[in-house]
Amino acid sequence: MPIFDHLGITVDDVPRAVTQFDPVLTALGFARYDANGSVSWNLDGEPELILLPARDPGTGPHRHGRVGWQHLAFAVGSRAEVDRLHRIATDTGWTVVRDPKEYPRFTDRYYASFVEDDNGIRIEFMHNPPRETA
Image (cartoon, rainbow, N blue to C red):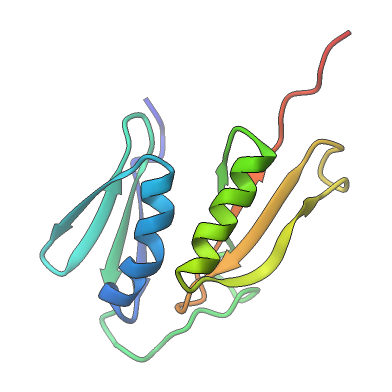
């Protein structure tokens, strides 16, 4: 059982955020559920992700580097999957923070991209396979 049960993200405009999050989360295998002004996505064995409306609309976007949210990384099975998810995200309005590339400062196998939505929410698609043993 995962320790993290769910992740709630406050957004200025839930319908607009859904147009950005839904294609990405659907591509990752999550199922969408709409209820009471919020939207959530579920996948067996993974924490639920929930988009919630801001109590004070117009207070966004979040600014990366300030106290609070930094980013959420999605681990995927290949570099090709990083590239595919990056394309899906950018095709649906996510802003490129960093195009897919290697990050040798993390490991010599780390490959990732970073994108940000209209609310300043940053996500990463990353592939970091285990080191091959001799």
